[in-house]
Image 1: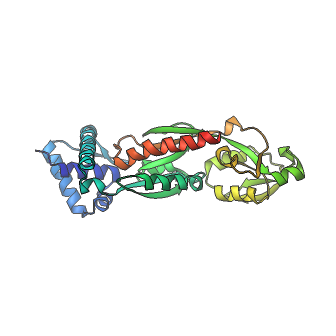
Image 2 (image 1 turned 90 degrees about the horizontal axis):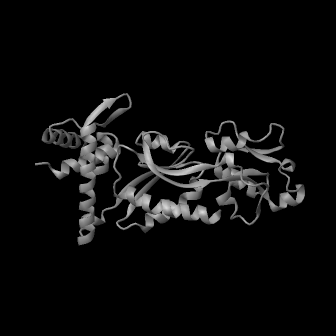
Image 3 (image 1 turned 60 degrees about the vertical axis):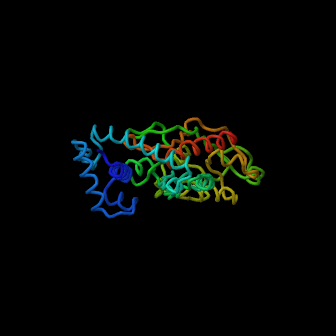
Amino acid sequence: MIDWDNLRVFLAAVHSGNYTAAAKRLRIDRTTVGRKLDRLEQQLGVRLFAQSEEGYHPTVAGRRALEVADQMEQLVDGLAAELGSPAGTQAGRLRIAVAAELGAELMADLAAFAASQSPPVQITIRSTADPAEHVVQRKSDIGLCLVDHRPDHLRGRRIARLDQAAYATRASVERHGADPRAQAWIRCSGWSQLPTMRRWDATLRDDVRVAAYVDSWPALLSTVELDVGAAFLWTFVADRRADLVQLAPPDASLGVDLWALVRDDVPMDRPTRAFMDDMTVRLAARIGQAA
C-alpha cells in the first residue's frame, strides 16, 4: 500500500527542487525526506527522479506519480475545507518572482491577494530582472514575467499586453511643447540589467538632450513626476497620473506581454492555483481599465 505521507513529501521535493528545501518547507529534517522518498520508490518499484546537467527532475513515472499526488492533495484540501478541519486552515506558502520593471506597481495587488485567501497564503516576493529564470531554477514557485513568447519548460497564463508611451509633466509640455524632440529625456543607465527598460531606451536618438540617467522603474517614474524630463512609461500606470501628458501614441514595437508562469513539470499546489485564479483576473482587469 502506498503511504500518502510519502507522496506528500514527494510533492514537496518536486516543488522545492531538492531535499533540503523540501525539509524546510515541511518542517522536518532532510534525512526524513530522503527516507520517505526511498520508501515511495520501493513501494512503486520505479525511479521517480533522474539526474541531468540541470539537476534532478521527475522521470516519466515520476510525472505520473505527480499527477496522482496532486489530485490527492486537492481532494484532501477540499475535504478539510468542507469539514472545517484545522488541516484546511494551515497557511500555504508561495514564492513569487516579479519583473523588476513592474514590482513596485504590483505590490498592492499581491498584498490584496494574500489578504483575501482563506486558508491564508504566506507570500515571499522577489523583484528580479528575469523572473522566468527564477522559476526554472526553482528559486520561486511562480513568476510574473515580461516576455514576448512563453519560455520553454514553463506554462501558465497570459494576463495582458502592456504598452509603453512617452510622457512628460504638464508643466514640461507648457514650457517646451508636446513635440518629444523638444524634451530632455530620462535615460536608462549603462549598468541597468532590466531588459524592458533597455528596449525603451534603445529607441532614443543618440543626440537627444539627457536630463538624467536611472537604473530602476521607481526611479524612472519618480524622475518624470518630479519634472526632470520625459521618459517611456507603462501606459496603465502613467495614464492614471493626472499631471502626466502622453507625448505620442504607444509604440507597438515596445509592447510586451505579462505572463504568470510556473514550471511545466511541477503540478500547481493550492496557493499557486489560487494565485492563477485570482491574480490573473485581478491584474487583467486593472490593466484593461487603464487602457
